[in-house]
Amino acid sequence: MSNWFCGVDFGTSNSSVAMSDGNQVQVLGLDAINDSPTSLPSLLYITNEGKPIVGRAAANAFIERNVDREVLLQQVDLGVAIEAYVASEPDKSESYRPGATDPNIQEAVRAKAIMEVNSPGRLFQSLKTLLRHSSFTGTEVFGTHYQIEELVALILAPIKAAADAHAGYDVERAVFGRPVRFSTHDKENDIAEDRLRRAATLTGFKDIAFFYEPVGACVEYAMVAEKKQRLMVVDIGGGTCDVCIMEFGGGHGIGQRLQESSILSVAGVPVAGDIIDKEIIRSKLFPIFGSQARYGPAQLPMPQYLFNQILDWQNLYKLSNEETINWLIAAEGSTDDPLAIRRLRGLIQRNLGYPVTREVEAAKKRLSVDMETMIEIKQELIEVYEPLAREEFAHIIEENLELMLDSIEEAETLAGIKPGDIDLVLTTGGTSLIPAIRQMLVDRYGADRLKQRDTFTSVATGLSLVAQHA
Ligand SMILES: Nc1ncnc2c1ncn2[C@@H]1O[C@H](COP(=O)(O)OP(=O)(O)OP(=O)(O)O)[C@@H](O)[C@H]1O
Ligand SMILES: [Mg+2]
Picture 1 (cartoon, rainbow, N blue to C red):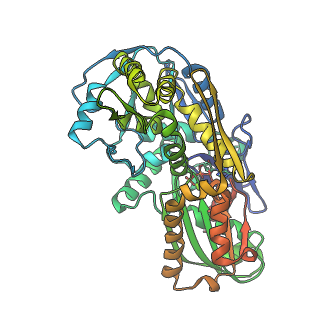
Picture 2 (picture 1 turned 180 degrees about the vertical axis):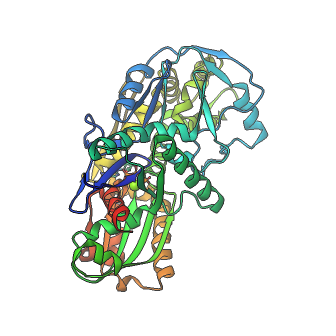
Picture 3 (picture 1 turned 90 degrees about the vertical axis):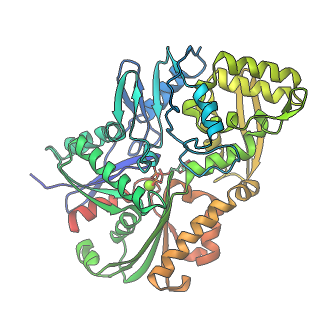
């Protein structure tokens, strides 16, 4: 029986697993209905009967069952602020505070603490981002309490099953990737890693080691790197931007090359694809849904929490209550932009937050190929055709790119080297495909030194090699 070495990349958006047996590495199939079957969308849908659905099927189940349906809400004053699950980024709008610390907002949210009585299921996305939030320990799903680790374990379950099936035995040992920084706060970093370890344990792994994700991607390159060189990896995914600089030996075989290698530095920042999607929504769609509109005799500005709820689409249905809908109908009669307010009502009443977010993400991806695209939402009450050009997109995400560049510079400083000292820059992760990000790297290192590795599987592949050789 051969001995298999397992590397797991639990990603914010996509997860993958690779197994190495000393001769070759195999990235395992995880989701037959996904565009790329070797990556499992890190999505979990729990039906109202308590059945978990993972991966592409989770997204499909949510769209089939939860979108465009009647929402029946019951006003229940829980006496406490409602669950603060999401708000995973520092929000720039004035009225929004993650965790709703402003008493006025807390009151507004509390007053809308309503329960849905006919929900068919609940979808969880970007759970990895939630791992760092100490205030989010878990949530109630149809009467059952799930700890955050249990939710993550449900996504890891098919990964463990695939590893076991491939090896032909119960795989107990695995090297898991982790971002360099789950959070900018050290304490939150530790909490996140502990929780991920516990989730992996719940899945059945017993001997779990962590390695930085970009180091995994660097090691993956060891399979083909034949000469001594200094490498930088820039891995930008859904939740984090991770950077590592390694010095590679040029020995024969991966084992020897890794022995001669050393990590010079790592750096990272929790800014990536999810935040970029939200920037697009904020900048391009908020106005379409009336964020600039005025209403009532005094022509007051629209309450901004309504728009921030679009970003927090999992909880958007909570606005579909009589009070808010009647308020929106009244506002439509007195506003300077009735069409926009009608769109907002349609979005809420038909629970279209998730499809809208998906279209924005798809438009963003199209801009990695095309110079311009159209954000197209073709729904009853909401017909949106909003053009977005690559240049405008680059402008919208300028500040995020600066934070990524800061991380790159930090990695260089920590390693005590200059851009000219790096032989090769390897990029991986879906967000590294954004042309403005590639241009940023070309400007710093030149096109000749830039190389793209497999966007979705290079980290898992490298981690399986780490499991074998480290
Ligand atoms: N062609 C593309 N152009 C731009 N962005 C893309 C493209 N393809 C995927 N993305 C974005 O990349 C992100 C997913 O990338 P990836 O699968 O590498 O992340 P992840 O590994 O799950 O996240 P992380 O490593 O941050 O935990 C998503 O935000 C997705 O929208
Ligand atoms: Mg990743």
